[in-house]
Amino acid sequence: MIVPHGGTMRSKASGRLKVGTKEKIVEVSRRLFSEHGLDAVPLRDIAAEAGVNGAAINYHFGTKEHLIREIYRQLFEGLNKSRIKALDDYEASLNGKKAAPEKIVRAWIASTVKFSTSQERGGIYWVRLLFHAYGVSREFVDQSIGEQIDHITTRFVEALHVAMPNSSREDLFWRFDFAIGACLHILIDKRRGHRLNRISGGLCDTEDNERTIDQLVASITASLTAPRLAKRAKQSKPKKTSIRRLPKTDL
Image (cartoon, rainbow, N blue to C red; front, side, top):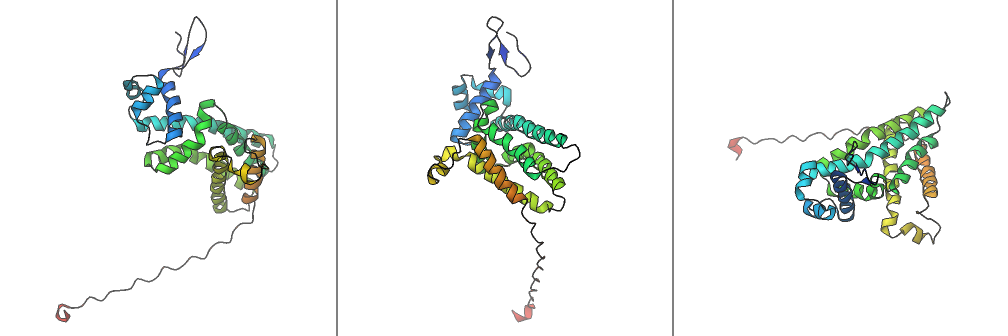
């Protein structure tokens, strides 16, 4: 057997790729976690489904926490590269011209939608795994996801601010976070009985990736380019009421 970097083995006789033990554990884990939740799947079930000895999980990952961290790291690794490449390529094409907010949004949205419907690195499980992560509210899960996405959010918000120098960075951060929610919400539509397709009488087809991308880009761009909000006046803090302590003689 020839074992290239990453642990995937290639048979000399057939030339076919075989998934290594570590990769098999990750593949099975992200599928089971996406179907049942992070807390509902014990390691023994993962080992049985992957056809490996329970000790193999301990050898490759040590703990369930480290396994979960690796799953989210892998999920975002390829996605983040495609997002940044799309933005870098667009900015490089400008040749000194002013960037269009719609194009920046499209660089982010197109990469995200396409990844969520692909088999590559478990893209089809990505949205459900995010919802499970937000649902369990574990500090290490929040930290793991933050490590993968915080710098991406900042990169896109800064690009938008350059494109709209008169905009408020506060507004952009608010609205970009709203946009993340909108994107995830529509991408989960296939897992909620195609609700949008049903209530629209078939007008809205979330199986159509290109239409989904166009609608998200239009909606999010409109939000990001809306007039900036006026600063709220700072409210004065209420004065603390002093409590008079009675002397002992008054008791």
